[in-house]
Image 1 (cartoon, rainbow, N blue to C red):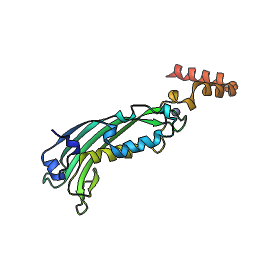
Image 2: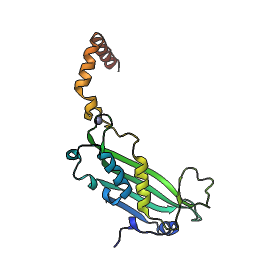
Image 3: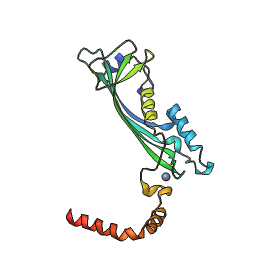
Image 4: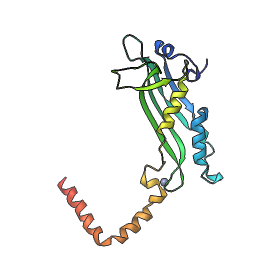
Length: 189
Ligand SMILES: [Zn+2]
């Protein structure tokens, strides 16, 4: 059996079948997303590029249906997530960048409008046949941050404990006072 993620059918057909697609893919099956990650990792020395970056897991779920009782407005509920290798723009080290995206998309042709359905986002169908993989790829691409950085400051070398300690030393006169204030707050909480 083929992978439904890569099949092409009309939006009406996907939705009429109430198709549910469980996504369990690797990054390498997404051409555009792979090329973006590859370009980002190219900033690293060759020996620092993770050997398995193409195997990053992409997971999630697509659920097709209709937004309206008349079944004129095909809808797909999308939840996708991934963890790709990326270069931290603060410390220039590689790290696992979590990506998550969630949207309820109306699948509409350019001629269709959907007044009164403002709670949904619109996916414009440029061709008559829809390949679900394209939606997943665009959602993850849009979820990429403009500038990737370690979310945990403890993990980021640019924000290392040593850097914090030296900053602390420079403000020694206030350190004891700050500590006291913290204790007082704890006491009153
Ligand atoms: Zn960092």
